[in-house]
Structure formats: structure tokens, C-alpha cells
Image (cartoon, rainbow, N blue to C red; front, side):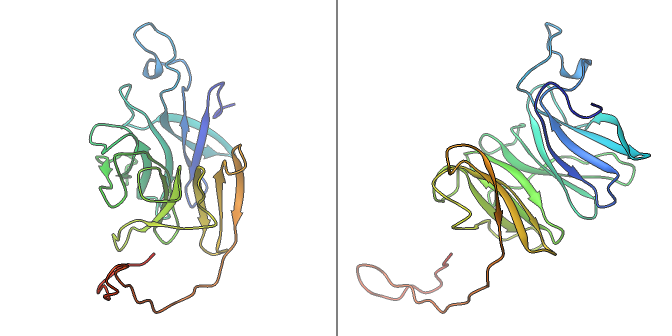
Length: 231
């Protein structure tokens, strides 16, 4: 009850030492932050909160400093070193609806200035559900990038700053596929999808990596296209 409310709560992200949690909440407690001018809870607006664990119990729940009553911030994912928090928001500076953002977590537990991840990740559509792996591979969902339909799951190597790549079938379908998480040591992922008509959780087992030499030709002229990128 220290964390959960009568509204929507989650997703959550826990630090490597297990003692700090960031989570989303539609409206949390009756305080000034989540009340509108009529002094009522603002349902539908989403905020990120931080909680700490002491003696095996979660408490000390506080809103992060970059929350605002003017926009939502949600779906936090904390990097392995605890220094970067990824999240989704429609805050000013977004390219479309919700974008993927990041913010530095300072040594004194303060936060830096949120930074939009830019066009390699975000579009004029909707991007959400970021998840950062232990080796800094960012997974997220988008309905604005070329894919199989609805929300698709993409990944990007944060260290290299490469373009986001569609993870392909069978994870992605013509329906909404989202909220992908990946355990690098176990090499297994979990994600949500409404491919069967309702939201269910699915497991993605590892597959063998296959390398191929590919020759790309113009469909009309038959001429080889040099420097083509194939996914």
C-alpha cells in the first residue's frame, strides 16, 4: 500500500542493488502536485516517483523533479550503473506524441536536464516503454517507424548511437507489441502483445545468429545497388 494506489501504477524499474525503485503512477496520494485547480485528483496524467527500501520495506516515496502538471512522464528504466534514467514523455521538445527521453541521475540524487533521444529513436508518432539492458541496448516500442503494424518493438545500441532497428518477427506482428524486457545473461526476453485480441505477456527465447551475404538489385533494371542496408 506504500506504493500502489487506486489508480494505475507501473511499470517499475529497480536499481542494481535492489534498494531504489522508480515507478509510474496515474495519480499518487492527495497532495498539491496531483491536484488540479478544482482541488481534485488529475486522473489520466502520469508521473514518475522514486521509492527507497529500508529494512525490507518500500517507503520514502517522492515525485521526481522533472514531473509537471502540464504533461506526463512515465515508464522509467534505470541503467545498470544507476546514472541514467530513460522514460517516455510528451513534454515540450517531443517530436510527436510520446517520445523516449533520458535524464542523468547525479551523485546527490538530483537530476539533470531531460534530453530527447532524437530522430534515431523518436518520430511524429508515439514511442514508449523504454527498457535499457545491462549492456546498454535500448528497447522501446513505436507506431511511427516502419514496421509490421501497430506498435512494434525496436532496439538501439546506446553506446554506438546507431539507428534504431526493428527486432522483426516473430516478436513483432500486425498488432501492438510493446514493453519488451531482456535479460542479457539469460538471453531471454519478455514482452506484451495484443496479437490474440487482449494484452498478454509472451516469452522470447534466444535464436542462433545467422550471417548471410546479400546482393541487392534494382527490381526494374537488375543493376546491383551498392551500399544498401538490409534488415
